[in-house]
Amino acid sequence: MKKQRSIEEILTDDIELDDELVEKISERNILSDGKINAIINDGLSKINSDNQNEGEPKIDVIHKRRNFSYAAVFLVLTACLTIFVNIIFSKNAVPDNYDSVSDTDMSTETTINSEHQIHLYSESFHDEGTIDTGGELVQYITFSGNILYVFSSDFSFRNLKLTAYSRDDRKTLFSEDIDDEGWIKHIKEDNGEFEIIYQYKDNLKSVSFSADKKLYNVQQSSISVPDTHFIEGVYDCEILFCTEANGFMNYDYVYIRNDGAVYGYKEKNKKSYLITSDISSENGISCAAADRSGIALLL
Amino acid sequence: MTDSELIKLMLSKPEEGYRELVKAYSNYVYAVVLNRVRAIAAETDVQECVSDVFIEILRKAHELNEAKGTIKSLAGTIAAARATDLYRKLNRTLSRTADENELYQLISVTDMEAEIDRKAESGFIWNKVTELGSPDSDILIMQYFYRMKAKEISEELGISTAAVTKRSLRARNKLKKILKEGSEFI
Image 1: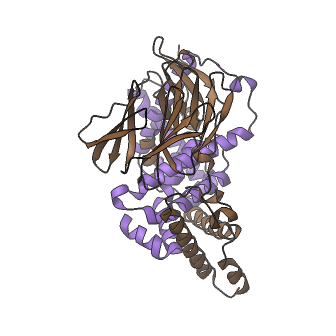
Image 2: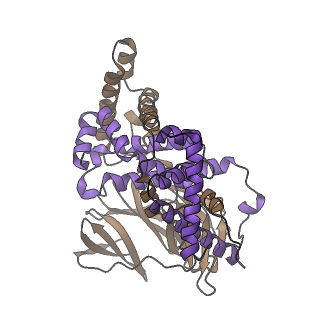
């Protein structure tokens, strides 16, 4: 028989509440002015400190003129930061974690952020190496045989691009521009023929290509995007990503929870199995692909 | 202030824009972050995470426009992601048992069911808390969600500490009564 809990036990339980409920709680506007001001001050001092650490040239000037007001200093620094960010963004290759940009990278080239590294693992979760995607926004990854296909874009979802990497030596096999913009929703694969379904504003589009890199047939149509895989018994947690296992460790699906743990799921017995809880990253896992011989996670 | 006004302000006067942004969405962002990390994070961690979320929004200000969605939805998404990062970071610093790291560990179905029951139960009760009305809802939310002490609540509401304690007890009794009438849990 289920053990009954007291009201106090339930209220002190640290279990995560649903988003809707959290929103409802937040609408009570409980935070005191003192706490809100503390958040504001903390943020302002962090922005100033970040700018100083990044070695902005303006900082020297500011240090010499200490009679500047705090607000003026902040405005100058933020303006510099905005200009800097705009310049970098115009090159379509900025990592969205600005904190990780080093001084050298700022002036010379695009930084490769760990968020854009794809880690390959064998079936036994032996690390098989990393693919750097060059700082672009990776939207989707999928395997076909010995090739890992990576679909990326810039950070405004423009310039969709397909790059194929060899799984053996992780070298680039080819790269193809899709010459469109959007957010990839789903990829269907059938005997080396791929169909990418992507969304731009309210339009769904599809582009097909064969595994021999030839892109063709871009069309805009009313495509029904397949529903997210429903996995019975896993609806109580946030799943960052779910992919068909394609034979990986005999699971039907592989999914990654918000706590960073990787699970396999078998449809036959509707059970989830923890594959590993050791794969986690500061930036979260946003993409995964699996097949019989291994798994790739975008960290 | 509308989203487009706020975006304009963040771009033209970042400091002022940042202040307005925090004022408008701090309750929401704080609640999203706290909800995810309250089991392991100290208040300073939560506060730092919340200010990081707003810095990130400020830095994305030039990318924002209403067609891409509301600032609130962006704030919610970033807050959830940063809270998850914080959770992982703090979790890694806590000692993990060997079992937790072991490969191929089977999650028992019973555990999973218990977890689902717990979540449903908590969701049900917290929904009822929000329906209690002021000041009962506020007191319970401050006490149990925000983990505020009776003294802090009394200062916030401008009533005595004894009154806070009494009202909290009364609110919980009210809750018990409501739940006894229609709940499957209590």
